[in-house]
Length: 486
Image 1 (cartoon, rainbow, N blue to C red):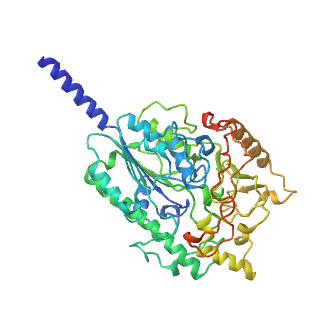
Image 2 (tube, rainbow, N blue to C red; image 1 turned 60 degrees about the horizontal axis):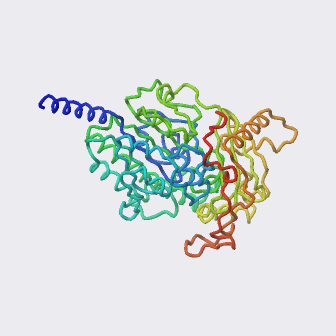
Image 3 (cartoon, rainbow, N blue to C red; image 1 turned 90 degrees about the vertical axis):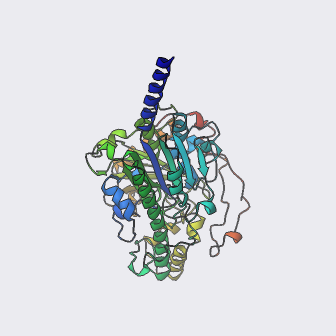
């Protein structure tokens, strides 16, 4: 009997040791932050000391892309490792079916303590993956980040953990912020696609203040991890769900809309370099994390593990990136593919301008642009958001045109073989992933011209609240696991 008890004790001890040796994982996800809005990406306007410190000792990904520039579809895509139209929730404020599998659920079933804190916006299916959900903004405090350190402090100490720390920063409307004034508007360098004015400078400085708050609480979590001696065994990912809430960015399929900052810190990987220029998609995160903890990946993942890139960042990974934009306040259907140099966009709704979502067109920055358009002082680059009708196709040379201002397809005499190749590849992706353009597509819920921002008096259309058919539904895309071209 004593021998049996001893063997059981040893087996239990070994099991606990095995479980506790598994890496912990934290994803810090910002709300509405573009790829170049951290200091480590060369932005001298913003102060992000904690993120920059992690980047210095981690890996900075220069070409990480989201599958859409819209909050809930993007987050669900990350959690499921699937394209938005393959989740059944391709539009803003829609939810995947309950049977959809998230990587958080897989971790939970394999002994991980899983916790969400901050903005949720993903649906009931996602809650199955979390041991605890803390999505009450007022309770969490500040930008939803105050609870993060409590979560680290109160977690079970006998389990590895995965935490999804989702900030409300830097989503509009700018709220009360104890870090307000951290960025002086006078020192802000305004990008050329916006108006350099006091109004826009103030808007940008408030935006950077919210990013600073996001950075501050990341630093507080780091302190707790170090105090508990688990920092070295914790993989940390810092990213965003879509681009900054300004015209030319959020809801766009350009780099300011779907390219994300992506910093990975995990000392145990011992990477051979600190910068990766590999093309990475957000659908690749789920299989990578499951691969990291050596769990069998489900067939539902359309992404591919880039664990080897985390060890050898200089190596190449993807040949192609795909993103999509569907309804987000306004009717839309666009698809994007890029290779290492060129980015191609196809737009089935060219009759509409691309001024941005509600929060962008009700911003001080938009007012500046609109006034400049009226008085004739707007530049060609700044007026790009007002083009109507828009081109059905766009092609950009990212080496020469990093902010996508020069559409190579506007010159009919300028033959570019990349146009043919990327159009063909996009068609293949659409076919293999069962995408389609719905006949009864969701219409505009709001008028495209609004009064100065006031959430209680938004001007709604006759179609408000009426949801059309979801892209991919006709072809049963939620059952399709094809990855498409890689």
